[in-house]
Each structure stands twice: as structure tokens, then as C-alpha cells.
Image 1: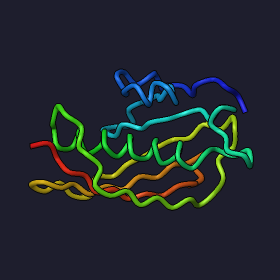
Image 2: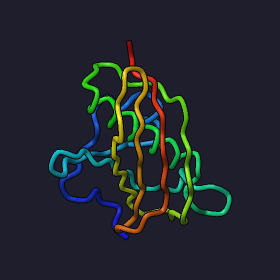
Image 3: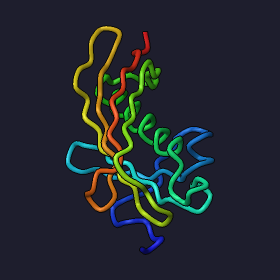
Image 4: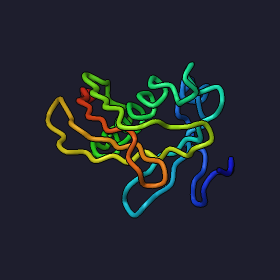
Length: 135
């Protein structure tokens, strides 16, 4: 698998210090949807040689938070209240992971959203988050 960034992606600006450290995280627009991507590197692997689950959960949390923020229109990202992450398959070093989100509902103080991490259109992680909206 090529280590190149897929066409249409560019580094996501101001992802934050932690994401800058584990990234770079890239993004592209697919119609009205922002899609995030990350190339899995050697430094991202666990002892078994696959992508560390915490790294994948971090990407999910980031993508969900940005999706909720865009949907809410706030300048500040929301705070994660709950994050449920199901690991459906292994993500290997060298693979490009793509994060797609769907904001289900934004209420007065909480937002609910889903995220899917895929490699070559094969879902590897499914997650659901609840977020507290900035006041």
C-alpha cells in the first residue's frame, strides 16, 4: 500500500496539539460532508502489530466532535460526554483510515452522532458519541 495521501485530502488545520502529535490528520469534502483520514504508521501500532485501539478511538472522537461543531455552528468544539467504540476489524500499518460521521440530533445542551472508520470501504470501527454543547 502506498504511503501517499489519497487525492483530495489536505492536512486539517488547527487539529490541536495531541492530534498534531499523533497525526497528521487530513480532511476532504465529499459534498457537504467533511471526511477525515489518517495513514497508520509504525508508531501507531500496538504489540500485536495493528493500529492501537486508543489511536482509533482518538480519531473517532476528533471526527465526531468536529462534525457536531459544524452542525451546531459553534466556534468552540463540544465536550465528549460518552463515547462507545466497537472494534470490528484490524487496521494495519500502512493503511489509510477514513472517518465518516453522521450527526443524528443536536438539542439544547447535547448532541448525538455516529462515526464509522473504514479502510478501502471496509468498516473497521463503529462508534457513537454524546457531546455537551458549548453554552
